[in-house]
Amino acid sequence: MRVKLDCALLKGFAMKKPKYQARNDKNLCLKHLNSSQTEAIWGDFTDCQAQSTKNTLDRASFHIFFNSSTPYLKYLSVLLHSIVMHTDSSHSAPYVFHILLDSRGFDLESQAELAKLPALQSLLNSIHPCTISTHDCATLLDTITAPINATRVIYSRLFLARFVPTSVQKALYLDIDMLALSDVREVFSSNMQDSIIAVTRDVVSSQPPLSARDTTGAPYHFSPKHIYFNSGMMLINLPKWRQELIEQRCVEFLNTYHALCFDQDALNAIVGKNAYYLDICWNLQTQFYNQYRFYDTYKPFHANPMAQSFATRKIIHYVCEPKPWSSPYLALDSTHLPMFGYERAIWWDLARRTKPFAKQLIELESSFTSRALEDYANALSKDLQAMQLRIDKIIALLKNPLGFAYRACKAKVVGLFTRI
Image (cartoon, rainbow, N blue to C red; front, side):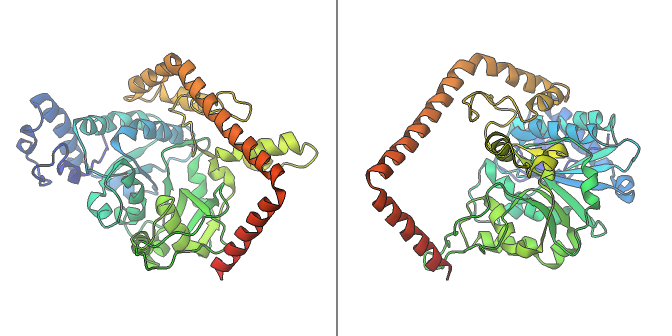
């Protein structure tokens, strides 16, 4: 078994008491876990310590990073499954899957989820060679001004260059709410030129100013010419990343400004023009489906500019509700019907076959049916409320068109002067 679990994760796994030393002493855990848990989990850790990934790293490996809280490992397992399932078997170059974690607040359930990784890797290795490594970023994350909660782990991707040898030229980062539909190794051959990262544009074209943490400081304004990118998929030029001190500069940015979209704002601000833009097929955010349908529905006689990207889609990114692991009744489409699309069936077909998390995922899927009517009613209620708000605004506009025009012009002028 070639799973490599970061032994630093032993520190304070389930406790706020002593911080453990990363050494081979299972008695360190005995006071907190029962004997069967200790033997099972400690066995995985000692096995992984004895295992070396040198053979894998010596070959032409493809390094792919993810960040995850332990409750989300089961969802990440489906993404990993989709990656190996769509790998061209004629090219045997292995994957090295790096999972970035935040050990703050780990409990017994966290250990149980981590203990399933060897079985997951066994499944993946039966399809294509790969190594799974975990890295605890808790201490690094402490350098960022952010609440210690389940979402803090998002920032850990800023530190990924620390976990690969300097000989590695490129690494891919992927959010866990994704599904691979093709061989992702293809993106590694992208001609990034001298860019720091290769990304795709975000469905949102711009971001509002970010206020400074220091109340006397000026806000940060993104350049009007900047194409705001989505950092859920990044191909990283590691030598350039290190040379340009992207990690350090992003941390400083986050400690200076209140980011609205976590480190995605920091990356957009710091990397700026040094980003190479790929076709959106490599990060097909689910909101793009609405834009695609708009052209087909309202501009049927015009060529759909997104047709080629959809025909060759490589990775789907579930950026909005519902996630594939959420009830399809929680959010409705433009016709007020549940969202069963977006290759959801493919995701669940893989989920049911992704051991050792399959049992949990199947139970989750079954629960959707029992809550369907209640979830659908709540979603319809939200849609009706939003529709009523739009109607009220239209009525207000019709009653006072000059007032609306005045406010619109004032907002434009204020926006213009704040950029000067």
